[in-house]
Image 1 (tube, rainbow, N blue to C red):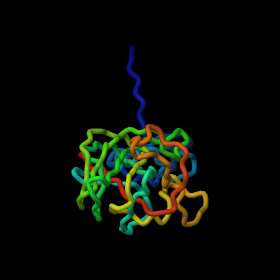
Image 2: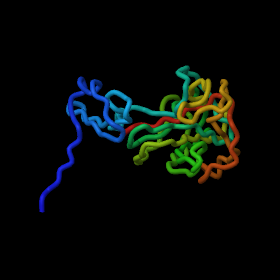
Image 3: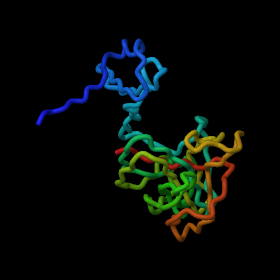
Amino acid sequence: MGVERIVIRRGVEADRGSFTPEEGELLVTTDRSELFVGDGSTAGGVKLGPIPSAPAPRAPWYYYASCQSTVATTAAVSPNAAIYQPWYVSSKISLDRIGVYCTSAGTASHKVRVGLYDTAPDGQVPQDLIVNSGELICNTTGRIQATIAVTLEPGLYWTCILGNNATPAFSAQNFLGTIPQLGNAAGTVTFPNTYFQVALYASGLPSRAAVLSSLAANAPLVEMRAA
C-alpha cells in the first residue's frame, strides 16, 4: 500500500505577499512556522496561527486585579462588605502567596480575608470561591500574606477582600473605568466591573458570590505572587 503525502504550499515570509492563494488553499512560512489560508483575494492569505502566546509570569513578581488605571492610591475596606475585582490571567500561572499591602496599620483586632473566585457562565461576574487566605491581621504596615499553592489556567478570575474594620488602609488603584476584556455598556467613565455584596466577616468569605452591586469607589488591591 502506497503512502500518500499532503504537501502545503510553503515559502519564506518575505515572499508570501507576492502570491494570492485560492479560497481554502493553505500556505505555511518555513522561517516563522505560521499558517495562512486563502480567500481568493488577499495577497499572502489570511493568518490562522500560531496565536502569539502571552508572556510567561515572572516569579516572584506580584500580580493584581485588572483595570485601566495606573494611578496609585490607598483605600480601606467597608466592614462586612465583600469587594470583587476582575483579574484577567493571560497565561498559566502558579501562585504561592496572596495578601494585601497595608499602608496604615490598625490593631491586632483589625483583620481581612482575601480570596480568588472563578467566573460565572455568563462571563461577567464572579461565582465560586477557589482560593481562601484565612484571616490576615492588619496591625503592621507592609505586605501581609498567606501561603497558598494553586495553579490557574488562562481566563478571568476575581479577587475578593472582606474586612471587619475600616481603620487599616491598603494599596489601591484609582479605578477610572472598566477592563478591556469585559467591555463597558455605558461607554463612559463608570465602574461596572467592580462589585460588592453584604457578607458578615465572622462567617468568612462567601463560598459563592451572590446579590452583587456595582461599586463606584476605589478598593484595596489583593496581591498574588507568582511561584
